[in-house]
Image (tube, rainbow, N blue to C red; front, side, top):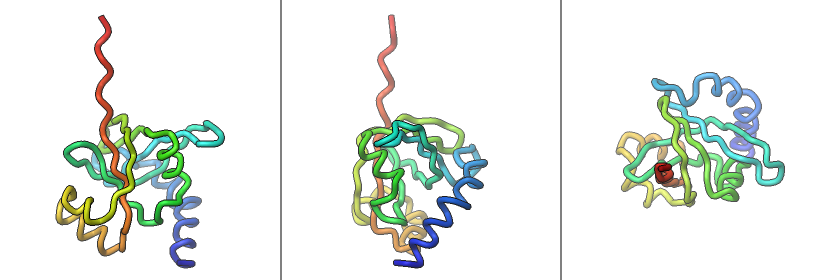
Length: 134
């Protein structure tokens, strides 16, 4: 686990800031999840891999369920996701296991996440559009 913690810290402080330059863009694999700090109310943006599924998004959690960004999203119950140049409001965050995720992910993505030993995923629904104002 010490190696994974070292990688997580490196990514948070070195790789993630560089990734934010391209994450969420139309032809890039990485997405951005925008969330609000649960203690500070500060706005944050974190690069993630967000896979579009029928009713929302599935985000693999290679560092487990105790990352700051995930705890912020769970506390708020919502986030904004930028993926492939599009922006979505996402709600109803739920931690799901590999068996639940497998039925919704493309086989290629499932194999990739299995290779990285991903054991938890975040599932979020796309928020309904607000009613039109008359």
